[in-house]
Image 1 (tube, helix red, strand yellow):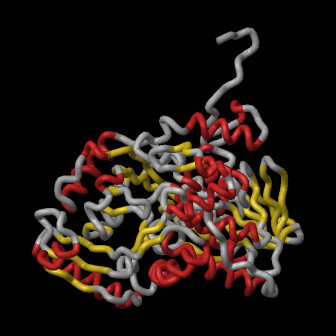
Image 2: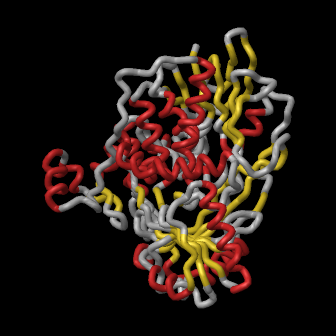
Image 3: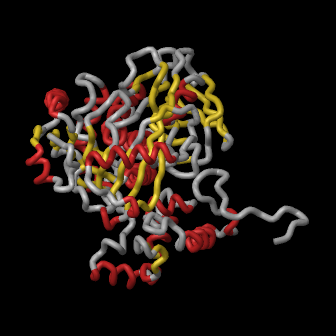
Length: 484
């Protein structure tokens, strides 16, 4: 019997898990994927939004600004990549400049500091490559960029180090009310808890509808992206947005914390909650609209494209657009954390605290005296000094064996990723923890070696190693009577 079951190991679920690990509670996270950060949290812009966009007075506005303020200290505590690089909202028509002033006023109501409306000349000082049609911009110095999987993994590891259990490949098939709370059915078995937290991303509606007659519907909103080689990563230093529309903040151009350039996303509502394919029309739209923001982005520098899904609530009994974080009225002890679309990544640290406060009111737990607030990430040979590299190699010669040449990731880093708390069991798990396979060749050279290392360290055959999902095998066993 658990005190709390968290359904979903995305950034919201992991942030909640970390905050609950401060308390004397028996907490478990159930995740349908094989690792943390398998859903929305793995494929997004990696932006730490300043907080000027959300409507004043909404939960989204409150948690956005609070999450932004917490991110720097959290990155220092948990050792993940974060940079406060500032952002610009670009205006392309003199008639629209008043909309920048409206955004500025909205941001100030939300508590965002340092906002300024700049003319074209001032924008060019910050971003010399800005598009020819840009006439003005809203500058937000508190905007930032973060590694989305680095943040999520760090939160999860710290939660686990403080006693939270994680069970993977545990899709929720049903939820039943029992005398002491709820029973959650999964293929890994049944789990009971006094309180349930639904942080299931695009599947949060299905989980909600298992316990409530007040139906919720989430429509996945697909966004397609293009990622560029590091050789063009310095074309911009700030995150460049375009004036937002009803469907979102438009196509952005941003550096990443790892030195690449990223453009996107599109915004297309779809029905398939696993519909992650990219399209020619979508990527053409990204290219066309990004060209308004930055001149001469070289198409030949693209190294990959990808898409992500945002959890957009399209049926609910409240106003559309805000985060849904509340105890379900007809299911006491069941807390929804749903509709966490942009700026959900930014808001995650504040969401964790907000939900933990709800749990404290409901369960009244005591605080732990031995909570460990810090976590150390995997050392990077690519970023280390010569002295640091020599020290790592002297302690473990595997740090001298380069596996991923594009990103200079060594066997030592991969071994660390596999054997640490909540270690990687898939090639995507290794990739997100070390960047092996994220470079120019997109794992074309290093992946077979990563498969070999995973199999060796887990003492399984290479045919047991998967990319990410339950059916993403690299090798299939031969059928009986069939030969190569």
